Image 1: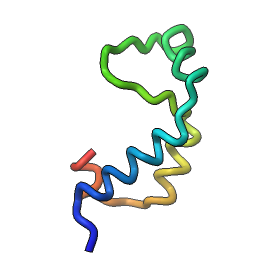
Image 2: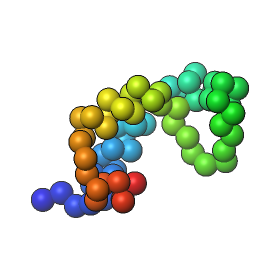
Image 3: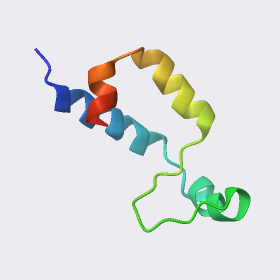
Image 4: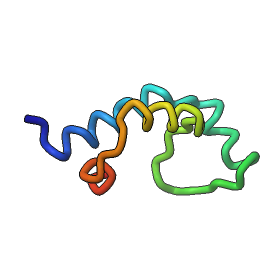
Length: 64
């Protein structure tokens, strides 16, 4: 049985695989996003597709 953290780790790993350096670099100029935190640079279209594949999972949302 998968634990709560396993789902979050898997979701973050998938986001890292979808990340684009060029998109991340453009986020500041295009959207005004400036942060000291780690960012991946994943487009909303990719995030929505990932979310659709995962489905509703409140435990996963809490873990993220």
